[in-house]
Image 1 (cartoon, rainbow, N blue to C red):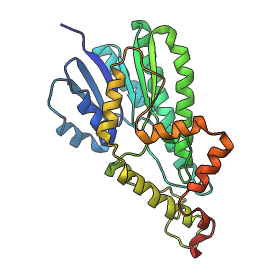
Image 2 (image 1 turned 30 degrees about the vertical axis):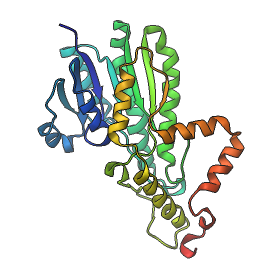
Image 3 (image 1 turned 135 degrees about the vertical axis):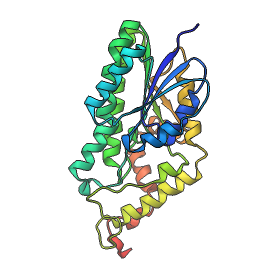
Image 4 (image 1 turned 90 degrees about the vertical axis):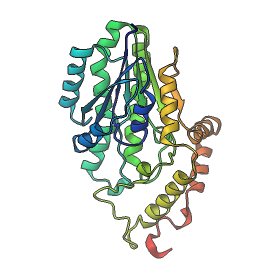
Amino acid sequence: MAELRNVFITGCGTGIGKCLLQEFNRPGFRVFATVRESTFKAFKKNLPSGAAEIHPHILDVTDLDMGTNVIRQIAAQFGTIDVLINNAAISYRTVVEEMSEPDEAIQMATNYLGPMHLVRLVLPGMRKKGKGHIINVSSVGGMMAMPTMSAYSASKFALEGASEALWYEVKPFGIHVTLVRPGFINSNAFRRVIYGQGSNPQNPSGAYFQHYKNMSGFIEKLMTRTPCTPESAARKIYQISCMKNPPLRVSGTPDALFFSFLRRMLPRRMYHWLLYRLLPGIKHWGKGGSA
């Protein structure tokens, strides 16, 4: 009987993570699906039936001790994690000036520090086995920063930098590292906007009122019109996990591929000028609600 591949996925409660669970629900996989404690009971009750062996776990990726305990428990019972998919993420819509330190810290902890802690936990087993695959779900925001999403982009830029360094470090051990960059996703889960504690998007006299107003509508429109779904992004990640020689970076959606091409082809100064001019309602920015 063939050995099952142990796949560890974070953030399985909604969006791409929920669809990843469906994608890996196939023969040959043992899936460790994690969600936060607040949603665990409902998640466990609605686990999909199918061909894969599915084990639900409670995990807050910002709780490093919890991550350590979960990985050690799995390793003791089932052995090495073969595929780690760091999918859990959070984003607060706030401009830099109004970003609170707690909001900034939670985004860095969720999107960068927590995932890299899990990477460190699974690497010894992968090295000993001589193979493994770490898939970090980044974002188009890890390649290009957008106004009102500074801390999110900072966390994804950090994830990309660490993953690139990791690619060089673990390649000699037969371990693959892949960054998947989804762009805009047509999903209610992705359209739920969380504003930071210090932001005041509803104040018409606020200095950044036009920033929030225009960017919120712009992002909503892009998410509504994109053909990309959590299902298609999850399918892409599954396909990458099955490659014998996966690339370091993969654009998870067509818009991410377009922006990657634009960034490579245009001189940097022209690239930033063009994107600035394309920002929605840019002539009104900085004028509060008077425009």
